[in-house]
Amino acid sequence: MPTLVYDIAIIGAGASGLQLLYELTQANPEQKILLLDSGDRSAKSWCFWENKDASCFPFLIEKSWDSMLFKTSKGESITSEINPLAYHYISSSKFFTYFFEDFIPANTNITHLNTWVSDLQELPTGVKISCKNGQIYQAKKVADSRPVKSTEPNLIFQHFSGKFIEFEEPILDDTCMTLMDFSLPASTNEMAVFHYILPFSKTKALIETTVFTRAAYDQEAYEKIWQKYMALTYTNQKYTVLSNETGTIPMGVKTQKKEGPIFTIGAAGGNIKASTGYAFTRMHADAIDRAQNRSSTPPARFHFYDKMLLKIMQNEMIKIPEVMDRLFTRVPKKEILNFLDDKTSLIDEIKLLSQLDIPLFIKHLLR
Image (tube, rainbow, N blue to C red; front, side, top):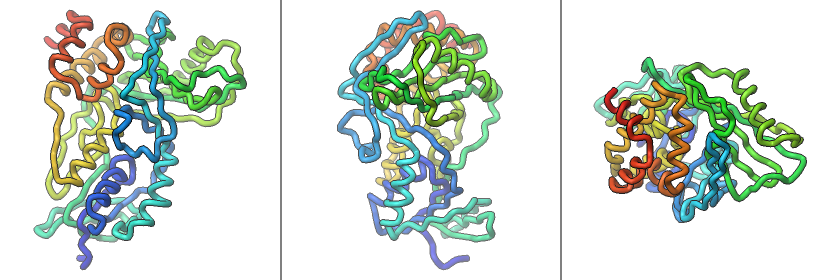
């Protein structure tokens, strides 16, 4: 057994592992931290909304929007400011560059190793960490971000297939992002489809096809939907594809959040919003709580709301555009965003939910 015992080991250098690394070091720069990293640097976009005076890595934010657009299934555009909130974008490229080229080299309390963990064993003195390369390490605690494969039979996935593009003409409003655009009639009983747009300038944007479905990822089908959307929305506009972005988020995965000497973080720790897939600020809040040795859990009713929406997805996917139309045409976007962030009061939630299709929700409640 090695003589050096780390105060904590973090398995995984993704969004959750690096945010925890940052907050632990901020709280106590003397503690010895072991970061075990598989080396995955796949391109991702991390987006979130929060109050402008909040502090979720403001120095890494590349673009923010104060206005948000929702486009209904009938083609009606609803734009509104979301002050004091703002919608933010961080690229994984900038995030990883900061951590691996600046933050980790500047903090000598961090030991960063590229390796895969094969086994964790709790001992009276801490945790024994066995790696696939044969190396063994020991830490008092281990934060494990490795995802756990779900065995749920009715699991809903959020698949996204997007492109970073540049138009020849300055046709974009780069002060307003599009959270959801249901104007392309692509939703069916098997999948709910909308488009998501982040305009970085008057010519450059990320335009993404987002699909909720039980089915596996289908790149060919999503490419056809994306092309139809572009033809409908940007008729006769010429553009160049700069790069592609694809991915999948499992929705509503039941996680057995583990605590103790070995504890789970990130998706494995339940830090993905079950009904939307947003996770970045949840991971950050969890990292702060752990660095400061405190615990905070949102009221159980928010988990109930998530389950209700997921039930509708599982049984009546075709209804999702209608549900979202009613929500975004009747409720201010700031209130919707606070609701989706588990930051509303019960009275706020009753007012919001009363604007929805009550018989539809009661039917799925009974199920």
